[in-house]
Amino acid sequence: MTESLWIEHKLLTRAVEATDTEGHDVKLPELLREAKQVFPAVEDGDIVDACKRLFPKFLSLRKYDDALRDFRDYRGDHDDAVFFSYRRFPS
Image (cartoon, rainbow, N blue to C red; front, side, top):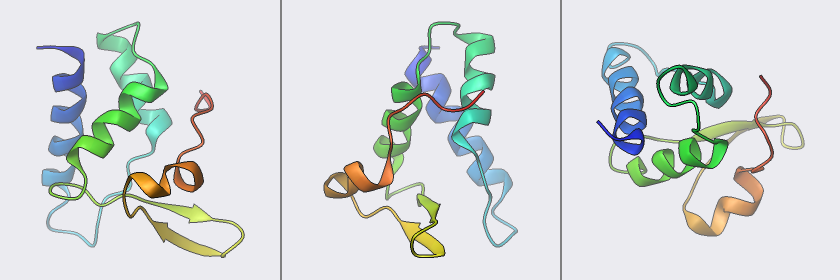
């Protein structure tokens, strides 16, 4: 299985496991740590790219926005600059 397919599979597996709840919180740093166990060269952008490929058909993406003091939903590529920071995820 390729790196990108593994990441997408892991994201979808978590989504399916959470279908009986209100939603499932998957933190990108957590997913990155898991991916690095299988693919040591995986980078932050690989995780973000997989999320974007699965959005909106399979995943909804949201994050807490301190300025809004509420969650912000991802609405597509035009929202990248605000939604994704592209800096290294904390370990």
